[in-house]
Length: 550
Image (cartoon, rainbow, N blue to C red; front, side):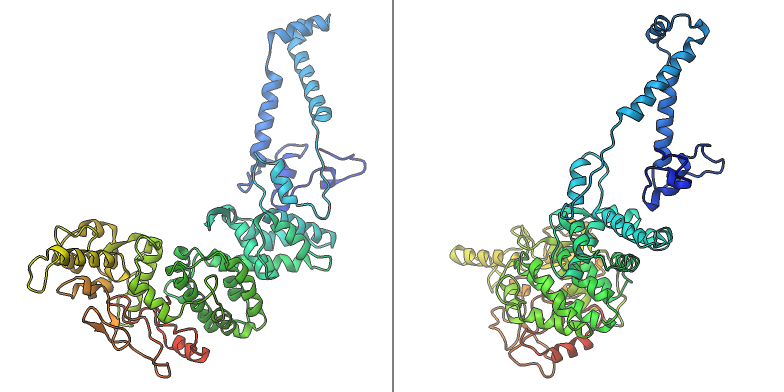
């Protein structure tokens, strides 16, 4: 444990010198004079607990009196006084313990080559031990380089690194895609992607950092400041200011499960060149692209190839990052990257089932956006957590008892007419226009009830404007589940919802006001991809907080 006291003084006497977080506790427990009276256990590590445990085990081992061992000692050491036998046994045990720890306990030193992956090697050797994060290896490497450059590493650690990155927060696992990873690993993954403009596999984070970031000319102190500042930015994503466009964006990112794009978001927030106004525009553009593709069930498998290209494009002109992002996404083609325009998105949602094919949290997200689009400055806005809302079929899935199919004369249909009407009804049940959101208790209460019962319950128990508008209707049937913009689509239901157009927008481009019966402004923030950026920017400037972006 100790170097030659004639050649080493102070902490240099210790052969092992841990990282900054554990140094004080380590030096204290190895004090030859014992723990000071005012010593306080450091809750940030378990060094005191480990020292206390091993000290107790040594005492128990030395104090244990075994009759067979006493008899053996008497035979081996003839002439030993009977009263001295217990002490003699203890001394023999202490010698065996000394030999075991000094001569038989082996310590392995592994010297890595330049191309070796320290993270993989450690995880292989430490398969049953405490996981070592790539962020831990980054810290060790950066502080080692800082020490080589005569930097005050204690101050750098205590004042910069420890307040932000030596926190249990970064070890908590969170889901991204199909896997759960420590938050620190996700941060390093996003940070490296943003910085190097290519996706880094989780197993190569430290190796990539060492080879591509921690170069000989790198200033380690500046690098520590950069890492901690960006870590604070990413941590702020968990607690955005309520009621802001940023809060709305991050809330919708959860059901979209769009962690792949977080390097873009990190770039937008950490770059001083990007104004708040342009950052918010970029977030709305990104959300529109993600949400439309998610609701249309377009593949996300190419995102890890697209994101680095988007980052490079935005970096080339950070002062106009929103314009660069819009241009890059608008140019996407094919199923793997294209941005669905208004017509395609409209046609999909009015003609396709979403319930049972689109993930329920994403449907709730879309309907919550419809709700938000109804708010004005006069609205007493409700802050109902999205995870408390469930999807309700206005015309229930089991409709036979309370929702009879009748003809114009009010009499039940029969034969082929009944079969055709039943098929048409079933085709409409799971479309967006027949869905709303309510709390789970209200959902259970509504069940398969008739429309008059549901309407009354919505009036009395739901405070959502979406449901208040629905409850204004005297009846609900197949024709109620969809409203098509007048003059733009054949209107088979016999009724329509006037479609608003903005000045300067081509008549050929239609907003998505008619996808849901009460969505008068839902999804009209962005027009089709062929719309000029200047036009889209005017629309963004004129949009209110709460306008949906899908």
